[in-house]
Amino acid sequence: MKFEWNKVTWYSKLLAFAFFVALPIAGFYLGILCGAARQQVIDYSVGMPSGNAAPAAASSSSQSQNENAYYKDVAVWQTDANNSGWSIAYPLDFDIADNYAATPVDDWRAGTPSGSGLKLFTLTIPRAFEPQTNFADAVLNVGASDNAAAVEHCLVADPTGGQENAASTTTLNGVPFTVFNFSDVGAGNYYETTSYRTLRAGKCYAVEYTIHSSQIMNYPPEYQLKPFDEAEVKDVLDRIVGTFKFQ
Image (cartoon, rainbow, N blue to C red; front, side, top):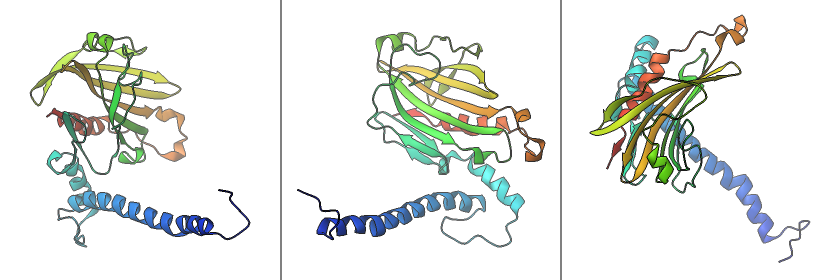
């Protein structure tokens, strides 16, 4: 088919419809979905069912306290059970990516893994979670590999290039995990990683998160930044990890 760009045709009308009508409608719909997720968090923070108007008497102090309570109440979080064989829960206002059709990658887990694997789930806590601080973001990943080398070295500390701490063990929903902690620095940035690993059905699974912050002294004093609350960030991340379970 020869396209005649200087004439009004049926396909030019179709393109115009897509750009000027369909796209704004799609954008509006996505905005509603995002707003609904955020509203559910806000509704929880003022102690009321989703969809109702917030009482005018709710103080900012009590709202802040209840927002903190939301991040501790895993029972009201969203549960992702789309991946075969496992599930995980997370707060609605965090960004996630489900990699249903993932292809093997070398960075399926932190450190220097032997063999490639799949990144199955990624969650990001944005900078806004710790406003006016040196917090950059935090990323939580779920990865798995059935590569022979990856399985062999799954529960062994591997060189990361940064400081490593002694491994420990824990249990998540009845399954034993080996826990690795290591850190790295670069260009005024700090990276603290906690990696939970276990062997399951011939695969190495890694459930891990990295907290990224920056050197607060690099910012001008007029920014009035304060150190971020690392304990608060770690608490919500550990709670997310604690919801990970095999089906």
